[in-house]
Image 1: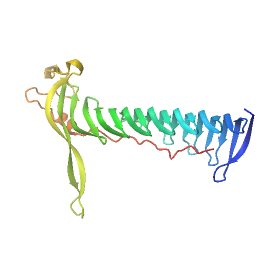
Image 2 (image 1 turned 60 degrees about the vertical axis):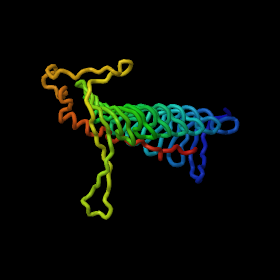
Image 3 (image 1 turned 90 degrees about the vertical axis):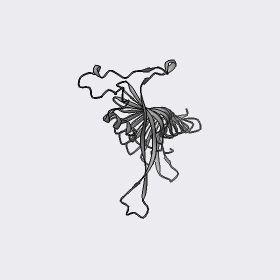
Length: 280
């Protein structure tokens, strides 16, 4: 490196910024330096041939910051982005976008731990809801729950296919008392409003259609085996769940109500960088 020093520089609009750090023989920023950009953002870290390259910290004037790897002026590699609302993403980046494996901690306490592509949840991942402890474990496609997955609650879970963030088609509810309710989610169109509108508003609702109740279906080589429903007399006194009547093959009213309720509350919003690093 040829020298170390500070200088003022202009951006494309003619605004003045500052740079203090190493340079190569061609006079380009090269090594370690700190830049104060014309818009008030700052970058401190490694440069290579005039571009941010390697480890660095970029601080936005609104309080957000990125700490991690750069390549050719872009967030690339592993890094952590702290957003102004208190949310945080830590994981892989490719050309300024969340990609690969990463963990997003949302401002409301929810978390997503899984795969990303082009800033969106994509691939296999686990989304955990802070308020209830419920979680979705399964496949994501471009930010939405799609294909196979399961929604896990305190004392039961739903397993099946998902479409556009909602359960769709065949699936089953698995209850901790030792039984499964098999059935299918279907979509029904319902007219909303009081009829005064010139064009009635149609909404789509999900309805669970139960088909049969079985014992727990084992996975793997013994998948055809089934465990019988528990003996009601062996349930602990004061238990909050009721046993299945083996003669009627029906769930209690409370259990059926759970099964009929779609199990996909809204997920947190992934911040999209309007928070883009400025070129210095």
